Length: 442
Image (cartoon, rainbow, N blue to C red):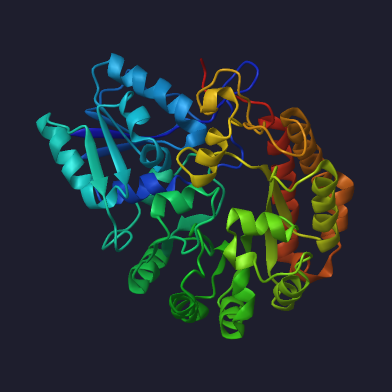
């Protein structure tokens, strides 16, 4: 039996498929490949860099679907089904909208695929795929290693992706991850994490956890085990980590370079409405949190969401000023996206504030990084333009220099200097390439 695992692209630019220079390993597909029986031949196809080989014989096409890649994923599925190849789809979007995804696939997997993956393969082998599979995972990636040989030669960034935990105990109203996991936070066995680290060759790791410190005591156990390995690593975490001194010390001692962190907004009312609990005790300028993060030398990728009901064009410009003053190593200024089946999506739908017929991810007129709803304090067009200008200014050469000379974090070592310069230039290029891109090829 032969299966093809597929990572879809977002879409196309003017005349060609978008090539993502900042692409990372599709970890979820490597995990499934590692759980696949030895008598099954596995091919990984990454639509972000290579053509889909519809002409190559395969017995099953397995496609991971995110909301931003749904339109392209359905095009790929149609290509395989036209060849008589059965298609199974899973991933975040499949769990959010299984009925929609089911119209484009022979089988849909909702929830975690790991508990049902071997059942899917066996059913495909026998030609009796069921329309729906549901996986409920209590222990992530049990007793298996990621198939990293499938990643070789595809030009991924030189950082190893792996996972210690999944989900987050917080339930922000706009967050698709919260909707997927329902407030659950699942922790992997530490000995298996260490085995996975030992099985790969790099010294730089990215724990792609939704919130690696959601269970502080479990995180401390992991960090203690990482200390003697002398690795460098990054992850994603919530701001309330700064209130636990032992956690912060162990994190720094274990080789943590920094985190992606959701600051979201400077307005307490916005934080309250969105349910951003870990930020609720912070002041409007996050002074205490920033002081602790700097004390431990952590580089921060600050994530902000723009377009809350309490936002104005002036407050959005204020977020840019704050980010520059704080000299964040990197920052993301994302327009709030109404992800399907989240509480915020339903709230906007009830108020008649959704654009693109409420289905922006499939609408032929929607463009990447554009507002998909009617904001309160400005027009959708004004929000789109303001967000783009904030991104452009933060990533301008002058702003890059200003961030670079922030002595704490960026310049603690030559290694950090090199990483900062390389990735800052890469993110700037990708910013302008992706703005306004259409989804899919059709």
